[in-house]
Length: 180
Image (cartoon, rainbow, N blue to C red):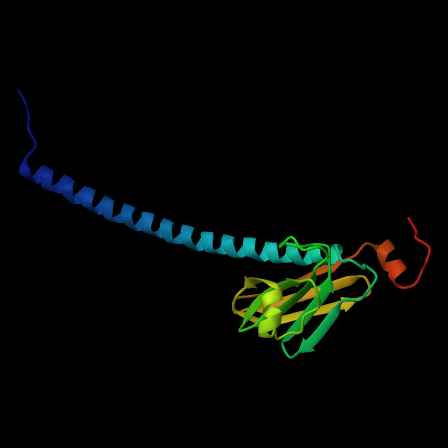
């Protein structure tokens, strides 16, 4: 004898399936939102690491490792200039400047030292890269063989230190002997 489903059994099974489907949709939607947030944070972390690596390469590849860099203070935003061998625009020993304009951190490369703010003529000679947005603070501190760079976005404060090797620091203070 063949037994078939009654109408009540079919309606109950459809109701149970509908409840499960609603919960699964909510779980998938929550997972998608979480994935979007994590992707955004990961992108910000990658951008932050690129900026730190750029500072690191510029400082360790300075053309004159014993010379002090040029730091101009102006309120919450410093202008940081140096001559380096690190170029992202295929220039030979470019002059690099980091500065903030319209709450964005920029890095420019040029073949000569440029004044900030740039004029129309000088803007034609430089290669510019926008590194970060929403900058509310940019400061650079130099102390013998180390640099402290801090910048703040509307979300968080980032602070990192770059130290030159001690042997280089000893030579930069006029000590002619290099200790191992």
